Each structure stands twice: as structure tokens, then as C-alpha cells.
Length: 349
Image 1 (cartoon, helix red, strand yellow):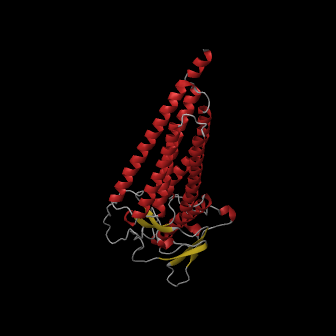
Image 2 (image 1 turned 135 degrees about the horizontal axis):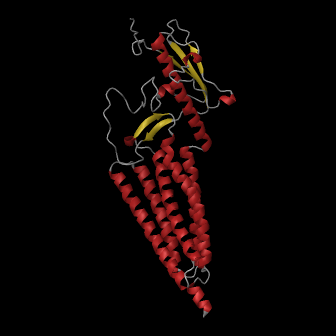
Image 3 (image 1 turned 135 degrees about the vertical axis):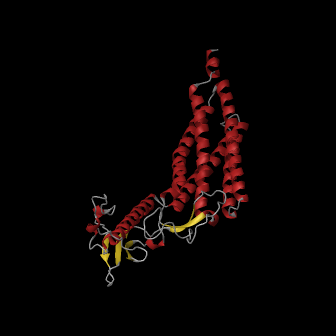
């Protein structure tokens, strides 16, 4: 009698293991789909929602990084908790725990189905607004595959009360292997789309160098407009009153420095800015609306926004093709146009 009462009780252990399965599964599925969609958006950019960018923008891959980190952590946790849940379910768990298990499976199927339906509605909405067909097909295919795996696995567990049956074991093993293969495949592919951590670091360092050179270039032009001559060395640009200090290469400890070289022409209006870069400058079409509906083009007078994100030569929020570079030492030749950048007139009293 005592044993029967003990087995019929709802145990906290089984309750929290079941709750953990639900949370980690839904999080893994949602992060998997977000990672898949964003990787497809980057690999198949839609020109309707894109601009042609020069340089690396870390924020372009923020969604991929967040979903990738979530998936890498939550999916292995889901596998481990599912193992504990299956081990508990194979034992005589009692009537209350058996009822909880049934409710949990129904809840998983409901939440997963709701998530899939919402994603499908979103995909169709993007498609009818003009999204390219190739990545739409890939997104729908990926969504249906995930929906099938979740539905097949937990429907199998629902039909087979005895988790020790050969059919339940074989079905669970096959679904588990497919899920793990899809997990590793998507993680590897997303890194191929986004770039390895080492390459991303190199791009960010190069982006820092371009920003520093833009800042130096601005100061050189300002120096010319103030004094009607170019500085002989970079040290002449330092101005403690305006709080401007000469930028240094982020890897100066490795001997890398920025170079400023006066031009050899007689006009004394040209100069070179040099730096050593770790990678070729990335360039190509980048979506600016995360793969959403087609956005209206803004009217910009006398400026092609598809090929320029900042006005040369002043530094701004982006980089144009005048800073395009290859790996290794690269010099950028600049010649000041006196009509565009006239010397500031000084009032003489």
C-alpha cells in the first residue's frame, strides 16, 4: 500500500525535468529557425532590401551570433535533459507522473505547432511582398523538416506508452541522429556565412584601422584649411586644446603603425595614408531590413546610396570604395581640392 501511494505521487524531480525539456526544446527550435533564416538572408541577399557595402559591419551579423550562441548552449542541454526524462519515463513513474508526461507531450506538440505556424505565416507574408524564391523555398523546407521531426518524435512517444519498446527506441535514435547532424551542419554553415571568430576579429581590427585613417584624413584637411599647408608629420596634428590625439594601430605592440607621407607633386596638396591590414576588405550586398518586406527607397538627390554610405573624405557612419584594401600594407593617396576645401578666411582687425 505504501509503495503504491509513493509511486502515484507527483515528484518534483520529474516535474522540473519535464519543464526543462519544454523550455530547452522550444528555445532550441526557435533559435535554429532564426539562425537558418538569417544565414539564408546573408547568403542570398535580396537586392530590393540591400545596399552594396564596403567594409565590415559587426551589427549585420548580430542576430546570427545571438541565435548561434543560444543554439550551441541550449541544444546540448536539451539532449541531456531529454536523456534524463527518458530514463525517468522508463521506470514505474506512477499515475500522476504519467499524467504529467502526457500533458507535457501535448504541450510540446501545441507550442511547437504554434511556433511553426507563425513562422510559416511570416514566410508567406515575405514571399508575397517580393522575397526571392530560392531562399523562400529553403526556409519553408527547413521549417517543415523541423516540424516533422518534433511531431514524429513526440507523437511516437505518445502512442508508445512503454518507452522500452523496440519501435520507440529505434524511432528515437533515428530522430536523435538526424537532429544532431542538422545541428552541426547549420552551425558549420552559419560560421561559413558569417566568418570564423578569427576572421571576424581580423575584420573588426581592419575596420578600426579604416576609421582611424578617416579620422587622420579629416584632421589633415582641417589642418590645411586652417594653415594653408599640409603637416610635415603626423605629430603636428596633435591638438591638446581640441583633445585630438593621433590614433595608433590596435596592434602597435606588434610593430604595426600608421604612416603619413607627403606627396611628391609640386602643388603640396597630396598625401598618402598607409596601414597594414589583416584581410581583404569585405564587400557585397547586405540586407538592411533583416529579410523583411520590401522597403521603399528614399529619394537622395545626386547621390547613389547603393554604392556609398559616407561622403568622401569626411568620416561618417560607413565606408565607401575609396578605402577598399587588400591584405597587407596598403596606401591611400589623397589630393585636396582647393575648391571643395577652401582655406578658412581669417578676419584681420
